[in-house]
Length: 333
View 1 (spheres, helix red, strand yellow):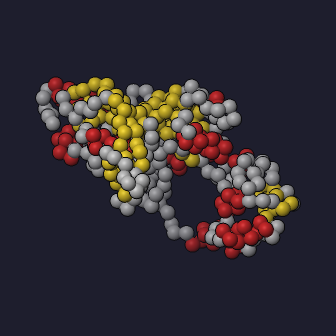
View 2 (cartoon, rainbow, N blue to C red):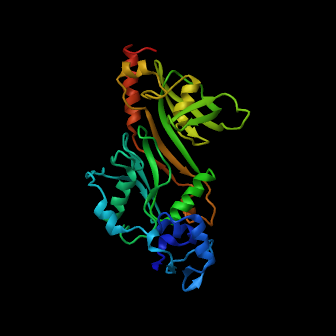
View 3 (cartoon, rainbow, N blue to C red):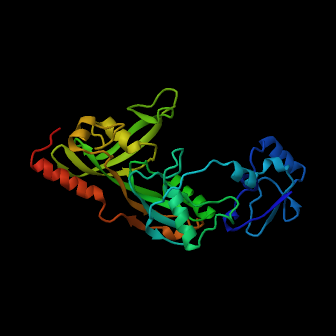
């Protein structure tokens, strides 16, 4: 038998999800059989899978030990890992539930198989150092980012300090209560306006195809992108981008489809212009987050109307340099 005491980050969590998070390899059929046979209890009583936990609840799991991670054995068998130095975290807004942090270009949002530094680990280290998170005391929650940026994109990311904040921020994003704005530099001058297209993701190649019309089978997903041209410099434009939908590579792929790709984009962009300007990273930066009218029942309701923006983003200096080059006629499309 294993027992756990629900902490603040387990408040409101569905019991079945909690059990799945603390076990390993437990078949779904056996999970629900354990519920039926009263082998999963809360505060000494039989509990249903949809029971919502409260802080201080005692969860008792009468499940075979083989389904619980053997921490000591894992530690012994785990291969040696290289030490990764996490970057210093830049925080632009913070309260008891969330933080809005800056992700520099090349930094991953989440860890991957490369083992490179990433924003989640940097945020976790930041909270641990402040004494706001103890990785050894938590049974299921760890700090997380709520919105994702590509490795080559810099800018603002929302990070959650606790489970309730993660849950409610995900709901804010799902219901379009968070407006995200970007600056980008395009090769070619796009028209300003709202553009709609249809998105197809090739997961094997991690590449997106954009189509002008919906497919008959209904496999494509609609995308909507706002484009506002702020300045032009020769063949380049500094644009403000608003995401009405938010899909993988949406800005980069949609602008390329429109004929004015993001400068420096090696996947969808203009390779000759990238080489000519010496641009090796995509000129795309998430510069502004605006929280709209958040319902009162959401624990992040007080964020309603708050705007967080990146001051003096480097992309503006990058465009100024291109403007000077265009004035000197050293670049042409």
